Length: 81
Ligand code: F3S
Image (tube, rainbow, N blue to C red):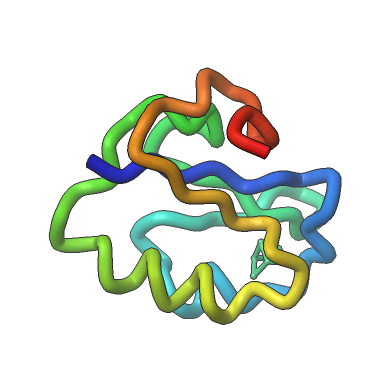
């Protein structure tokens, strides 16, 4: 399983992830990215058919704000760091 979450403390609203993976990432009023699957809680498994988009978004984020793990983040982007 794959879980994902955006660390909004480091996201610079560059806008790349929503272009790459529009079914996973959206932007809030300030342009900061969040995972719309679970309102950026990192608790919902990313569907298999979106895994490739997710990896591409990970590679494309200039600030490494996109986090991926095999377990739930429980709302904490830095849980595994
Ligand atoms: Fe932010 Fe990275 Fe997306 S900086 S807008 S999480 S590509």
